[in-house]
Length: 147
Image 1 (cartoon, rainbow, N blue to C red):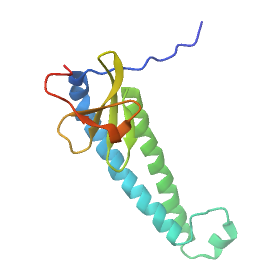
Image 2 (tube, helix red, strand yellow; image 1 turned 180 degrees about the vertical axis):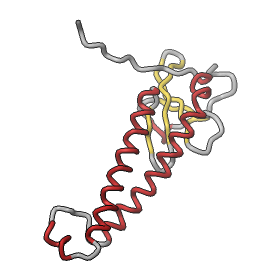
Image 3 (cartoon, one colour; image 1 turned 135 degrees about the vertical axis):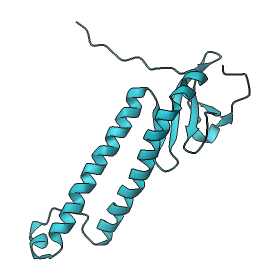
Image 4 (cartoon, rainbow, N blue to C red; image 1 turned 45 degrees about the vertical axis):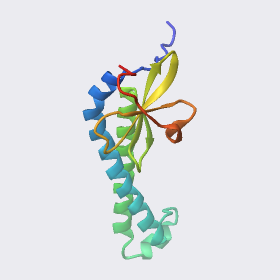
């Protein structure tokens, strides 16, 4: 038995927009959790507690146990983030940016592989770009062109 290589899912504009309510919830969770994780990581670094390798320092630190608990919770949230990203990948979409909430849906148009491009806050998928241009090459979808 050979190893089955997964084929990339391609979306039509209609199928991508049908999936958007689920994608919107997942991406919203990612954006919120990412922001929270980054803030907590920065606070820990600001306290000089970005490195947990020095156990003797934490024994003398009256807040060491509390900081360690924050670090453990942070690791759990990073795992949750990865779970959300895995979920998007399983759905066949490509998550691009945790700040903007940017997602690409692989698609074909006129024999060329493109990406239907959506970001959090947009009501529907209304933009696309070529694979090699990314977000900077984003173009508005002309009415009736990508049925």
